[in-house]
Image (cartoon, chains in turn green, red):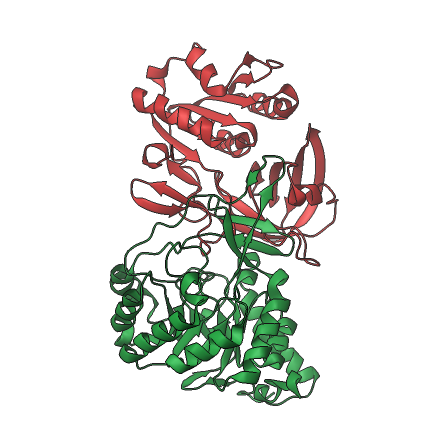
Length: 305
Length: 254
């Protein structure tokens, strides 16, 4: 197979392969270096950052459900200052594109974070998380209101000149409306889906499993929803899409590419197998060979024909 | 790893022996993360287990587990020769660099498991006492027998009084003849309630104590932040910086 068979472009953001780790499932990129050469990935999306340090939600923060997990981590992170001072020096030599993921409780927060990352050379793109279900203000409250998505995207666009990704929540009636709002606001790339708001109840204890009651559902259980949304957005938008939601194998990844994603995010799979994202790259390669495809771009959106 | 044996050793309690073809590492307090199925996503996550015993010469690792859900139910079906994927050598274990000390091990329920491996490391160079607690004899008998065989002094407590002292293992420590002023180090593992009580006891007695925490884990390798532990030094990950912590540094809620 040609060496560049897996190359994809997300506008200005060029990747050697379409596999990106999803935010919050790969730490800051250095945690899993003993399991596989991280530089083999297309890109790493870093753990979400907020303005101030956040200690996250109470425990339990994770619950397993059939073919899925619910999490309510609550964006535990060191805050932007410590991230810039301590984390960036540690990760800048990872030798692959790093995507920072930012979360805010107000439009001002998002703008501030984007400004702080504008001149960070190690950061090749910015993912705006308007879809975290686990924080009380901001987060998903932004991601379910197209007007707010538009405003956040627009304000961030004013101060951030690199590739701008807006990550959408699936907890909406009309995903196309949300995608359009992000693009009108200035998003270059759309990523989706974030987790689906859900709940687990312990029948014996007769109470919610998560301390926070609700959490975000991810894993194979959500894949059909994610695929449908990627498919819908590909039809209506003219920007590249990073598709994610329950991708566990190369075959799953290919399904997202066929639906119209130009790249894929691997999240929950990493929590099961630390090297899942690398395996997925190999499996995509095998798929191309098996189907005699010389350029991955040939299959993007093909399910629409 | 390959299953060597999987035996029921008590009420809902099983002993699983895993053989590795490669040189196996691991210290008391560290854990392994087992993938219970590769053909389905239910259960989706791996399951963490502390090391009950490790034979370095035979590359044989033993865990003890209690059936309490879908994952452990599946494990009971494992049989000799089956293969299972394991992430090994995870987390930070107990500080075992001790000589000529009076050491007390305190375990509650399945929290006793990692203390056996620890007792084995300690026993030749230190004076070791083990205080073991469980709800009933059928959960304690296996541990009692094994600790006794090691030649350490064993004290038992059961909630129903079926073996040893009737009550918790902390009450046992308080009511036993063990001279607390003579204890150099305590090592504990068990339910949070037990560790909280242990903390107030060792704080007043000023006994240096390490505990292994049993937080619910996701990835086991430090990326998901499900098993965060509050400490005086900020949030720590049970799977990465832990599961063993200095008890005085752990902040318990409530």
